[in-house]
Amino acid sequence: MTQQHLETSWLAASLALQFFPEFSTSKFELINVSENVTFKIYDNSGVATHALRVHRPGYHSRIEILSELAWINSIAKDTGLSVPKVVRNEQNRYLTEVLISESNRRYCVVTRYVQGVELTDEDSPDRFYSLGLIAAKLHLHTLGWSEPSWFTRFSWDLCDGFGGSPRWGTWWAQLDDIDKKYLKVVEDLISSSLVRYGRAKDNYGLIHADMRLSNVIWSTPDSHPTLIDFDDCGYGWFLYDLATTVSFFEHKEQVPEIVVKWLEGYESVRLLSDEDKNAIWSLIMFRRLLLLGWIQSHPQVTVCQQLAPTFAYDTLSLADRYLRNDLAKF
Image (cartoon, rainbow, N blue to C red; front, side):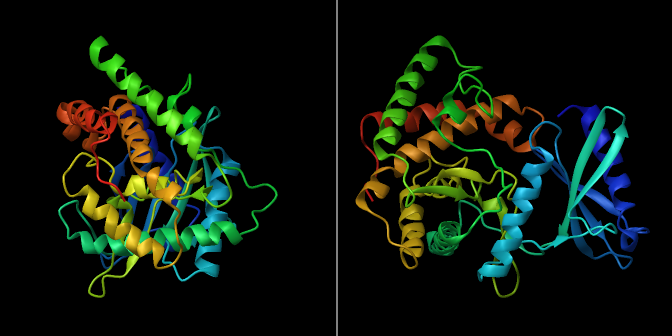
């Protein structure tokens, strides 16, 4: 995102808040720049009460955002899972549209702010049991939910990561020819593995698709988890949600133990087959290559700047173990 786009997002946030009279005198500040730009809204006493997300132009259509919000509201209504509460504007709408200019329309969404802390990859693997349990409950909801006829979300299939126009950019954009050829072999193995795994109702459906640690907020003092940021939700393999849990640190030695704990939590709610478990590393590698593309195509994002110097090297190291079948079995 360019500086101009960031400045436009500030303007969009100011315009959007005009549709919420209760925030007319509120202070707001930037808290995150990723696919979208997110702001924190404070009340008059200085307490953060709401979050405002300004959607990046061109990533989601109006109907796709409304579909995301419909699913969040259904999860809140029909499950025991904690998700952000979406707030209506003065026009009784969840989606606020603002015009920056005649040719520049931005979509904004306001939710209740979730106070709490994030896990890190250094936290005890036991904490990841809860993430598996959350994912299983989410997938059970998916299996039983009747989507509205207008519901529209994209998918996280092989063509979306490895096709001619991958959603997050090509993973090979900044690699030399040798590394590119090596990881192309890995891509082919991932593809053949997931084609064999197949897509069926019990392994593929509507998923969160970004259950990384920064998207689960643990309230204090009771450590109650809230799943946030459904911006990437769409159709994919259910265990892709597991792969996203170890985003950016897939290569670290504690990952197998984390996966085991996640699976224990998941299977306390919903059992998995041997075929499901055999697909785990292919899905983790699939996610890893998508992230390699994302890091190279989002140089302005802080986490990308932090990880870029070693991410390709660590990806190659993990890929080597994947090709040699030298990874933990589940």
